[in-house]
Amino acid sequence: MQPYFCPMNKVRLLTLFWLLGNTLLAQTPAIQRVDPTHWWVGMKNPNLQLLVYGPNAGTLTYTVNYPGVKLVKAHTVENKNYAFLDLTLAGNTRPGTLEIVGKNGANVIRRKYELKARDNEPKGRGLSSADFIYLLMPDRFSNADPGNDKFADMADPEADRNNPYLRHGGDLKGVENHLDYLKELGVTALWMTPIIENNQPQTNEGGAMRSAYHGYGFTDHYAVDKRLGGNEAYKALNKKVHAMGMRVVQDAVYNHVGINHWFLKDMPSKDWLHQWPAYTNTSYKYQPITDPHSAAIDRKVALDGWFVPHLPDLNQNNPFVANYLIQHAIWSVEEFALDAWRIDTYMYNDQPFMNRCNAALQAEYPAMYTFGESWVNNTVDQAYYTRNNINFPFKSNQTGGLDFVLYSAMNAALNDGEGWDSGANRVQQALAQDAVYQDPMKLVTFLDNHDTDRFLSVVGDDINKYKMGLTWLLTTRGIPQIYYGTEILMKNFKNPSDAEVRRDFPGGFAGDKDNKFTASGRSKAENEAFDFVKTLANYRKNTPALHSGKLTQYLPQNGTYVYFRYDAKNTVMVATNQTDKPIALDMARFQERTQGFTKAKNALTGEVITDLKLVNLPAKTALVLELQR
Image (tube, rainbow, N blue to C red; front, side, top):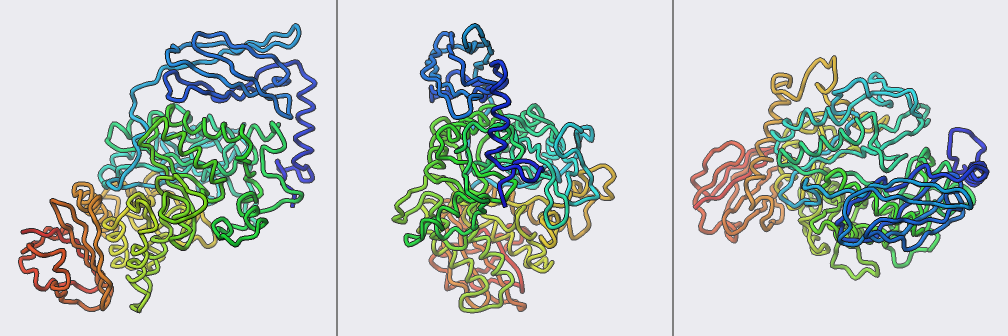
């Protein structure tokens, strides 16, 4: 298969590139676009590289005349429709509108470019283990404005809630309308799948036409998808998130773009993408990246192969590509007041580039937190992609990461029978390897997300296992993340498609039979689940020992797993019983952590236990006990 760039078969990448480029080269020079669309004075990094695009824009001789702004160098590339201008902005540069002037003989082209003053909206504040992240897909969460569901001028003009593979119409205003629901649940940070424009044609996958409702195929980095409400709706949402005391996580995609991205219709250069003689997919194997014995071709395929044919793979070794992506990340933080970044397909990126990007963000915003998706099954490989204590030749500077190892361990533990290495031993053993990380508290822990089977289905619709898993999630180390609907018992497996685990949130759309954003719209079981998460999440929020204290865990015995979270002020004991029989837990074994305490309060029920010699642990139950003197 060749890397086609549009639905027309038989059109190869380079053919399309040169045909479009040569057509534009025959035109009078012009400037049609400048990225970033604007910038700010007073940034810590004085350097700015502008991508200038238009017919023969690369044939112009450029000048910039504005106090404090210097044009250091103008770069040209293979495609003469592009120029890259290196500017420096002095520290005393004032806000205003400069003029980019391009000359070619008698032709003089002028383009205005705005330098803005920075605002006081909180941004770049990062995340910590005190946070609780809520992940949602905006297209599937709530639809506040049916008028933006679809547009005839977009590559995918359809929206149909009856089709699980097409867009359903959820938008950013719909998310904003339900922030009170998240606040009640105890959420402190909002992570949405990407909101950047995905003006992608539908793709045929498994015989079904599917839209890019998930958001992972960008087509214009500087535009929030208008079907979600556009840039202004995103600013309004984030402003309200901050006003309610929560933080904003944006989903970054550096590895690839959508097949319909504007700059792929007339590429700046052949090496803008990873090119292969014939279409080459990534192997999806992470082992060659960290394996000291791996073959070079295996490593190259893993890193430079395309994720799928309709998501072209960016070449981050091209300095203009790298600058474009890094500047967009900084622009997004400043423009939309972001606090943290989740990074898609982290391990498929060029890792030195990722270090540059992370460092650039933290240079402007020292508290910035980044956590990437590296879907691996062991702690060594997971540690490779974050700050670690292992003697790797490459040292990552990523602050956090998605904890796929603990995710796998918790899900498996709840379905295992008791054994030497099974049941809760899986969780204990995963945490026992935390020494490989410089700070395991910065890992993001989770039970399910938009790419996995839903947690309730994984545990066989067993409410006791559900509660035990959520107890582990909300009381162990790290930054917990919950997937939308898990708190109201939404379920399903990915079979026959991912759409099954991305269903609409009931009550978010006109005509929904039930509104599960409200207690009256939820069933008794759903309210029980919601209240369980709410109670535990808010207790966690208000108990520093539970979210930021030290962790001491004991080897699981006889189906029980016990650990403690503690600081100088408080000690919390978590005890789980996976067996189908009640257990009288002999507390003598835990004297190291219980000495001096005479009673305990159940954090979920308020019940006070006055005798700590034996603690009754009901069958298939998790207890969260705050020890008292």
